[in-house]
Length: 193
Image (cartoon, rainbow, N blue to C red):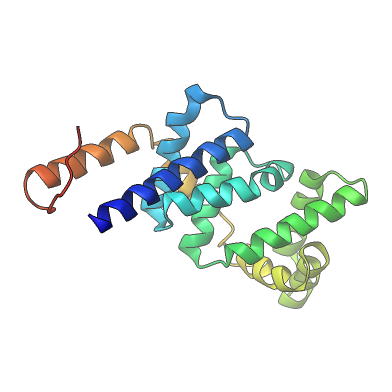
């Protein structure tokens, strides 16, 4: 019973976070199923829980939109960070810092972001790449992001492909879990109705 209560609380928290993330991003309620499928597929592919993805999406959605990322791309990027071992808290803090600084300077964050990415990728050496990243993202995040960008850990195309085929993921996961419970493969104290 205590495990079920803890599980129920975790599910409620995840639903709350997903709802907040969707409201924050201005996602219409009729699109919720699509975003839930994307979050679930990204979670399954990266190992990062749906609740954590939703929490990061809520905290960082505005920053990522300023950089030109839509919701699907943001989910893919967050999943990529997890799968590639990028410290997402540090990286996202650096992106927020850059957006804030570019805004103060009256610069377009999306344009500046792409300029910095290009400068880091095309830098003649690691030192030059790090310098460009430090200037844009700050010392701590600059090191994390310079390495991620130079080594391909910032590339999230594979996760975008996963998300583009994610329709029905939540229902499929539910059905697989229900079958496992019904067959006795998973001991159940609660059944799905």
